[in-house]
Length: 127
Image (cartoon, rainbow, N blue to C red; front, side):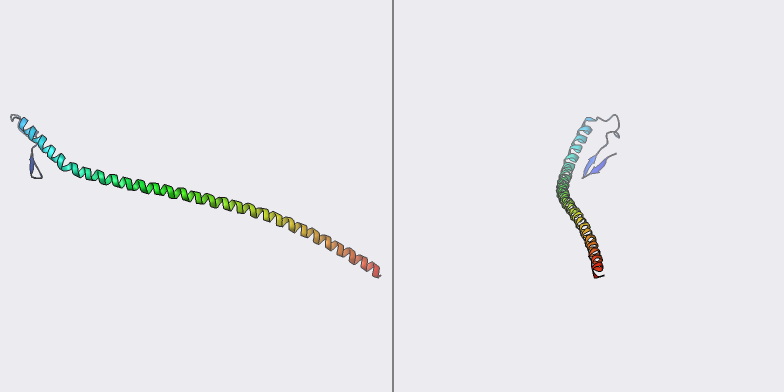
């Protein structure tokens, strides 16, 4: 069963009758295969080149993505450190304000006691 490829007639050696001398057919078949390889090889080469270029592009994108990720991780770590430091400072300020408030409340209570004592003493002195 012959095939027609780019104007070349390819013969299947399986379909040939057994009494035919196969050497000329095999030689022709080898030549036809060589022609096909020569025709197809540039296409494969172009595909390989194209795929290699795409792989290189994807590798570049991957490297860029990794750099961006590393940069963002660094920024995130810096922001976390800054927020942690702010939280520590806020906690210190809050503790100091609570201490000052309790001191002010103690002084107020002491002043209120002194006022009552003075009022009581003045009340007794006026009587």
